[in-house]
Amino acid sequence: MKILLCYTSHTDPDAYHLHLLPTGLVTMHAVLRAAGHDSRLVNLSASSAEETRRLLRAERPGIVGISQFTHNRFDTLELAAMVKRELPSCTVVLGGPHAGHRHREILERYPAVDLVVVGEGEETFLDVANALSAGKRLLTERLKEIPGLAYRDGTAVRRSVERPLIRDLDSLPPAELSAEYIINVDLRRQMEFIITSRGCPAVCTFCASPRTWGKRLRFHSAKYIVDEIRRLRDRLGLIYFSIRDDTFTADRRRVVELCSRLLDENLYIMWNCQSRVNAVDDEMLALMKRAGCECVQFGIETGSDRLLRFLNKSTTREQMVAAATAVRRVGINLSIYLISGMPGETAADLRDTEELIARLRPHDGQVSPLAYYPGTELFLVGVRDGTVSADLFEERSDEALYVLPLSKSRVTTRRLMTCLEREGRSAAFSRADFISQKGILGYCHTTNVMAGEWYEATGKLARCEEEYGEIVRREPGNPWGWLKFGEFCGAAGRVDEAVEAFRKLTGLVPAHAPAYAALGELALVRGRYREAADRFREALDLNPFDEAARQGLAALKH
Image 1 (cartoon, rainbow, N blue to C red):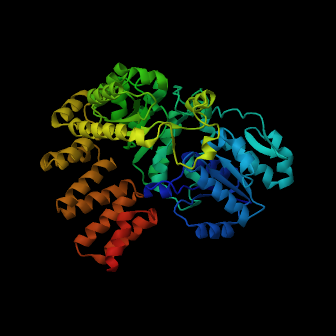
Image 2: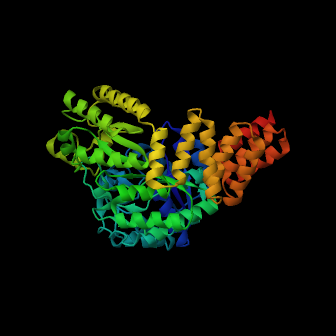
Image 3: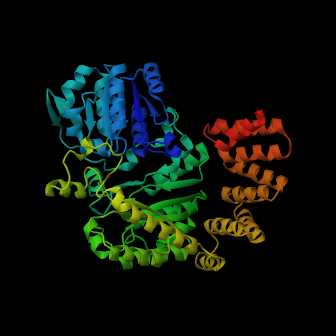
């Protein structure tokens, strides 16, 4: 029996996300494949209705699992209805944070949805697939026995017992081992995003994490993560990663072990992560930078003490300043998240936030209006107090359900974005900063990459070449040195040196598609068109979504 695990969203205008999936769906896929099920991953966001129908007819799955978030809740329900029209006997299962918290409303209103996974989904969905593989009658008989499931019993909606959380995350099969069974997914970009823990120590009122993952944090071991990164580098050519844990640094000992392993095993990656301002320290940040961390993102939200209490952030402005200072001291880029459009926000609150931004000196940031999400304390209190309808998510079709109308928060959002952009321009690291960072850390390829990029952007080309050249001399096995030196030489017209650098890179990381695309572009400069076409095709064989290689081949045809 074939299984399709689907994501679809036509509300996101950013084409970057049209070929990516939620990381949880990828893990679910790996669990199913490891258990012997014929599972496929598919992103239908860029597919028309007719293309989706053709895919369903061609694949004829027995189960379709759909990942539902608040922003794509109606897209997923339309997909469920289409599946039932095309394949009436197919079992449609919804999962994800929105579906789990709104399972009753979904099953009461949308007959195309057969089952909803509530909570952590891997083991629950696997139980459903195992039962259904033995026959639909057996699944019907076992519904009450499968923990973590919501279903219909006649006209009533029932929920089985709560499923215990997976205690040992290392027991989950590595996601990349089964990732070739994909449709409309940019595999390289997808696998850049990794999650190394589940849960968050905080209980912010606007976040559903405590009710989604529970309040107990669970972690992959440092060895599991390093082994996964090595496989992704060797198999897919990845040398940059984005760690999407709610609070990556929640377990200090694990972070220290992970970074030490990355350094000891010479994996030479770069990466970013998210954390909390009360969960970092100088020593940890220095080790993270040496191990390749180039950016840390903090949820700051506001500079108002009163609004911090309203959001239940459990952090203070002084903690924020101390964390930001420590991040900048070792030379890690600082990114912050802010929230606008909060009830009762005053001009004084806004000034407090602007003053805090000036003290933090972030390199960049994001501003989002405060929104309701199912499973958050904010929504539950709003329903209890009568300020918001209990059926808000079913009654309104907005992608995001903001607490205040956008017309009221738009001015605040723009003002904070302007402040972030202004501070970001002045917060850029300088030559003096890089010298200081090297005094603190010693040699560190992350510092050299960041310094080289700054020198190149400011026209100090000799200093730029020194930074990249030092990586090559000190660490000839480090792909970042050859990548940046190759790009520098290519831009300077030093074609032979650039070609040699990219060939060194492909020798170290044979699956690094951008290196082959760069070699194709350099072959074009040399007038070697057949060679250019070969290199572009090699890049596309490794990554069909490589835009530089695709454009290079298109240029050759003209």
